[in-house]
Length: 115
Length: 118
Image (tube, rainbow over all chains, first blue to last red; front, side, top):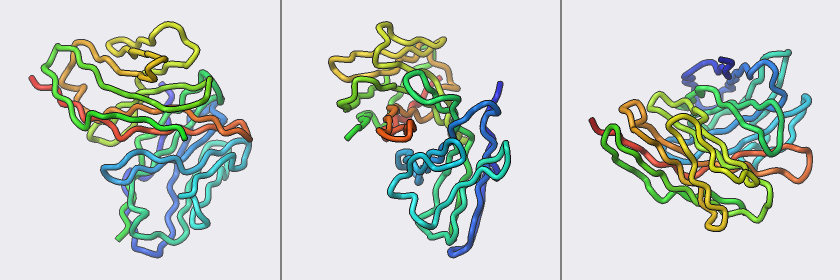
């Protein structure tokens, strides 16, 4: 069964360092998303991406964040200068379409720990 | 603004019994979708079931069914014949369409932690 793959599963970094979280969406999907979940809190939308550009982003997704689809399979989230409050689980999701019947499938997540 | 409310922080059920997890939503949109995801202790987010706002019948997927009451704006998840492996966090979510760009996002509730006792 096709699945969304995220690497690494756990990333530990020092405050101020750059991190890149990687995702391989389901192969024929066209829409890509990043969400985050701070420990014990609800899942929050960060950004959606379609046709090689950002479709929408939340207020959380400030200038420290960027996304890229560097090739035909990978989708990355970069945090340029990490802060303690960036510690969270980051989920990548993909979907084949948008609209009424659309379902977003999530990866297993990357747990980011900023020290 | 669109919102999902899950009022049960934790629920307990005996193995093989049925359990209902509550979810209410708030939206002024006519077209929307409601989802349930399962998050085991390992952390991944697993899609369980989907209900569209125009779907007249309640969605079912194996042991999962969604009790959709549109007038009450509720979309409760029913798990029949609970198994020990059902112990997890369960999140209700709603699709919110952005007015421009044809994109969308999911808005999640705070989740319900289900514990299945042997």
